[in-house]
Image 1 (cartoon, rainbow, N blue to C red):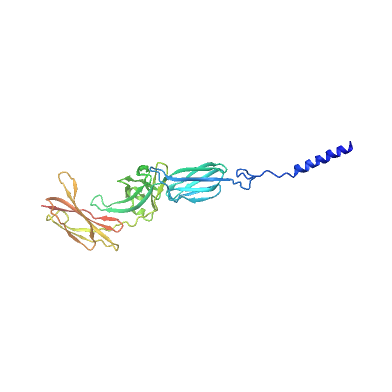
Image 2 (tube, rainbow, N blue to C red):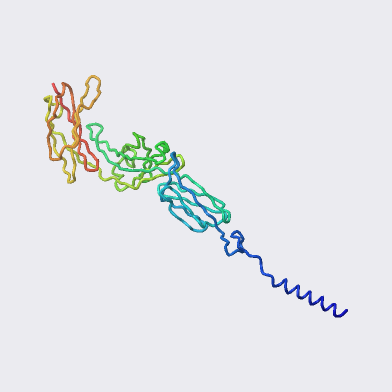
Length: 330
């Protein structure tokens, strides 16, 4: 009996030893976290496209995975590819200057792949923004000052994407809506009475900006711009004036302004219908050299009552117009 028990114990021990020395099963499945080939990542590809038809790829858009900080720029067709994007929940941020940024929330399975696409809203773009000042002198009620602001406002997603009522110019703390003229052109004429103390000089040194919003709430804004000059001086008509009789081809004469900057003249003759008071421009000529102090009207005016003005215009478009000088053609 004693020897039999010993054999059993020995055999049991051998069985125990053999079991303890058996090797582990191989872990070569890349989805197995214990495998040396395991990658806690997946493949993320996609395209960044325009918002409007036809959908076109947007190049050089910055695509960033927030969780890993990985980033790349899209190719010419708007495509991007992250071969080792972190698996799980991913926050993908897409941005590009002049576009409204977008954020995508994705779930990338381990070892899996996602092919995604998103459309970026192009924000309104403002070009050629400028302000010019105008002084128009009158015998009554006196000089009238105004500022004219113009700009081209476009949207790569189409002109209809712009909300016209949002296009405005802001100067200091004041904002003025701009009118949609033609095409992409917007304009507003602001009378000096709308400024503090009713004084156009208040604009000097003030920063102007133009902004516009589209239907996706993307807001575009111009670079700041400023008033270049307010012209107070003016040329003074000397002949014909004060309802003098004149030939049908009058010689218009004036005294030049005393200014040191470059400018040109613009002459204008207006016909007055004395029975109705209706006034109509009979002739206008811009771009006359500043060396002139007289100009012979090149046509032949009909009999009636007229007045003429001379305007000086600087290189930036700022202007100052003289008082009316009246004459009669018998």
